[in-house]
Image (tube, rainbow, N blue to C red; front, side, top):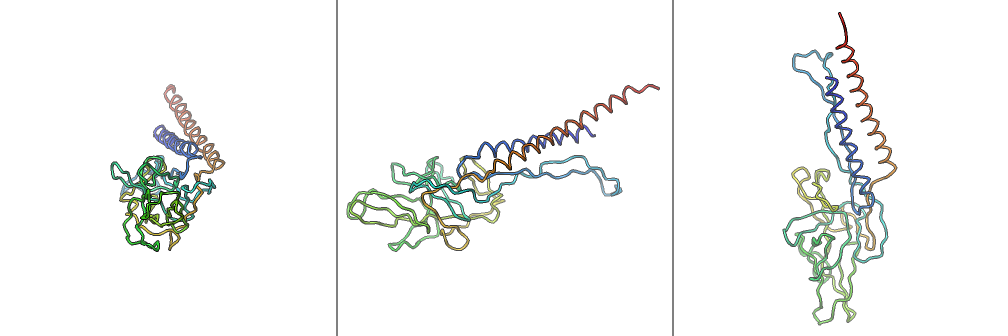
Length: 270
């Protein structure tokens, strides 16, 4: 039994090494959130087994848990780079499939149609607003910058406020609030499904998204001209890497020891 117990330990150590390697590989990925491997012991017993005689039979990977702590904020100076100073996720939606994603990566651009999009051409979602910049809806939709204003003046630039207001300026000197970026929160963000490119999707474990306005209630304010870097701490990950390596080596040594004992028993002579 010791062979399989130690083998499970080696497999678990491999999973841990893989998670740590993934964290280190994404140390420079904007909006990335690190993960950690959580283990659970495995015991073998039944209702009639003496509780003092129940034997452990190794360990198993219980979960790979994401850590959504806020990463360092880096100033970029770009008007369309936005970071969240607290709770919340940006919401984006694919213009092709209609799939909804949630992200902390606030690096946006303007596409040929005037939509604010991320690096995968998903459109940033926000609330429609009135002339005073107050939301007129609680359902997020695409944010699109107009090519001209009502007077026919051409689009000249865009600015994003701490409260999420997206203001378009025109070459006649006027400014118009065309939408408000919406933020989403979840009852259990660790239940979100990773889909790559610093994007997540809602699942039954995370619960449905709750939308709100930046800088209101529990939602963090927005900081234009900055991006949230990965929350991976390289020094911490390297220490964890050494620990996982030692764990793997110790389990390998246990298998070697069990093999030597088995060989000794087999070589016994009467």
